[in-house]
Image 1 (cartoon, one colour):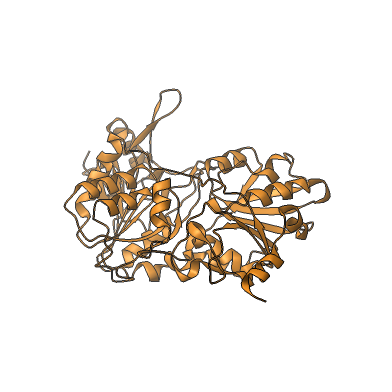
Image 2 (cartoon, one colour; image 1 turned 30 degrees about the vertical axis):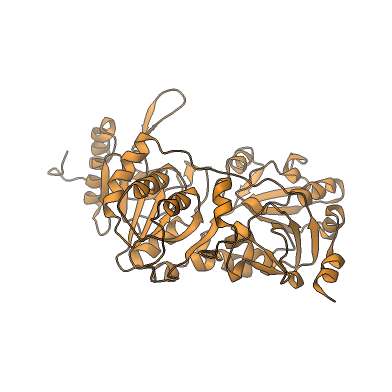
Length: 443
């Protein structure tokens, strides 16, 4: 049977394809732009005949038909291991449930503990060699596709083709093909950084050297770092990152991103997931200088550590005086997920000449106009994303401090020095009460 004959033999309508789902099955939607819009709608249409179907996804734009059609979760139970704004609201309503995961362990979780009865994922169209393309979601969807007992792909012509062997999904591995419409990609262009974010970035920037391999997390401060680099005299930077976004396109356009001096994959940028603006997706499309790889490779400590002068820059939400860092919750309210922050903190610090920075504003103002410190005496319910024993540099608009190897009183002193001035005296009193302050500490 030739390729096109095999392709046509596997063609199904969305309604036909979802008939494979049974009561109690685990159905996986993958991540982000892998969302299978036609299949999700068709599965929701089967609501009355299905019970206890567990649906897994993450970073979904929403709305999800299987969630919206079943507010009591009698038929579909939705689970996520990294919240988008939509999924966060679902968790707030008790309509989605969070699954803790560290991205480097994703493959291990799926192969050892998670069941994927049916995977439904969007892919870029099949090429002349008979391979669909997992596009900018390869970091997550590679493992899901490999582990699924039944694999349905929804072809989305809008998805970019990403270079790299791991992005190729052979027709032979697919059970059913649904030709969907060109669903517009979820575009997340990075907004210009604020003056506050540029102030925070300015304390990290002096540590960046020519030839560094850079991981930029999502958010304002990493984007501000990207802008400062683009405006600077730095040269020959490399890309090895869990999530690629518009910041790397800016570095490329400024001639800073060459990957020439990388010690791992020289000449090639490496990422696991990609999300950004339309020009960013266009830059990635069939670009041989950038490859997508599974997260169990990209985020492995042993992989990251092979990049000399690895620089990891990520955002966070809060820290306490012991040096614990929260990047995923406010109290017990889930905001995002652990993702790959801990992976890159560990990997960068294991690299020759590597550095890791966790960045945040020193304070925030709530809806009522009340200012709150992001540096807290101690956490009370906040989820610890990076334990105190792994934290390297912390940065706010008031400076950057190195916590590695610091004792409890040294940590308290360092963190209070980059806290908002309005809260420093209060934090000192808390440190004294917690027995982590010396009388001769700097006030």
